[in-house]
Image 1: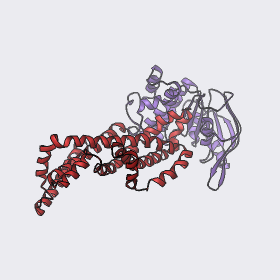
Image 2: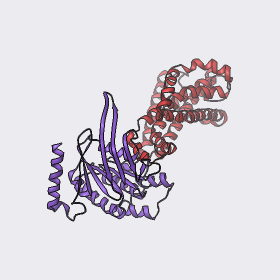
Image 3: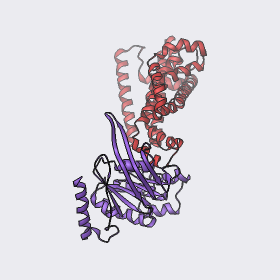
Image 4: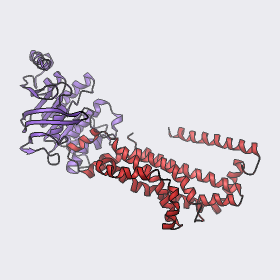
Amino acid sequence: MIQVNNLSVCYQAINGSVLALDRVCLDIPSGEIITLIGPSGCGKSTFLYVLAGIQRKYAGIVTIGGLPVSPKTQRVGMILQNYGLLPWKNVRDNALLGVKIKNGQHELDDYSRYILQQLDIDSLLDRYPKELSGGQRQRVAIARAFIMKPDLLLMDEPFSALDAITREEMQELFLKIWKQNSVTTVFVTHSVDEALYLGSKIVVFSSSPGRVLEIIDNPCFQMENLRLQDEYHSMSMRLRKILIKD
Amino acid sequence: MRSRKWRGAVYSLIVVILAWWALSALLARPIVPSPGDVFLNIIAIFAAKMSTHVWYSLGRITAGILLSALVGVPLGFLMGYFTRIDKLLSPLVYFTYPIPKLALLPVVMLLFGLGEVSKLIMIVLIIIFQVIITSRDAVKSIPAETFHSLQSLGASKAQTFTEIIFPASLPEVLTATRLALGTAVSILFFTETFGTEYGMGYFIMDAWMRVNYLDMYAGIVVLSFMGFCIFSAIDAAETYLCAWR
């Protein structure tokens, strides 16, 4: 369970301070996947950085499993828009980075091999990121996050740099692996379609400074052939209306 | 790729030798001997008269570069990563960098004598600043996002250094070493003209004093070939260590 109470974040800019998040309150139950949607610059990424322990200056109370945010003790997997791979490490070492730092594990074990296989990148182990396509890089980032068996998965517009076809493939693949693990996940996106497809709950952020406009239970989550269903279209309309009104 | 690189080296060598040969034929004076005579002379005297000098020079230059890297790279990394250390040390570096180090030569010689130590100190004094500044800037140019995945994993400072800072700045550090090498060779020559009877600098100056132009040119050719070998070694290291680029 993640509890966020009155979270505010201020950035220091050249002309004074900028309020990025304004008194955000949000509870995220364990084992759920919530999507965060809002216009760009609304502080969605800042919200993730607070949970990840990267943004340490904030006001309000944030607890993960009842404890304050601490990347050293918590297992947080992060998947970023630019993949977050280290260009000097090959696929194997990039995928193992999480377990290397958390457990000192240097070699592939059965579980990591299984994940790499599921993501279909087990034949690319010796390649460097520059030798991979965008989709392949994102698979490596996903592998890294799942191999470390995280308690919390934070995803910052992970698929937005991919082309439409690869994006839908990756969403499906991600959901498949996620179902096997049911990790608490916060998924930031600016795509209404992605928010509906991946989130059991959808949190809508306002434009800057970021405030929670609405938290919606998503009836479309895990629906078969989602994009052909009426619910998908009515939910999509509803979300768009909230976003436009803001 | 590799053979093409070597072919380029061979072509440029041929051009240099041709120009040299043309110049010597035009002047027809002993001060510019023909390349053929010089190369024959190298073959004749290398084992007996030159090899010791080569080893001395090579030793000094390697020691100078290694010492500068051992001190300069960690210092530059610390300055690049910790803003407070940078604020403290940068003015010091900027203040001392422009001092013409040769002006310090008498001081160094008085303090450390005429021997190897003062030669090493001179080389280090001159190249270490390039190494420090390049290493620092290399660390500073790593984008903040690169650190994010490691931060969210709760990596320690030591892990951040080994996983990100060192590998990310290695290419730039090697470039700095290459730049420093050129300077180091010319400084080496200078320091070897006093207080020693070994080293390529001594060999060349000695040949010049004895008006033995063949030996002098042989020394210059061998010195530049030595530089070429060290440059190639650094290139090879980069190809191997930075294959990810």
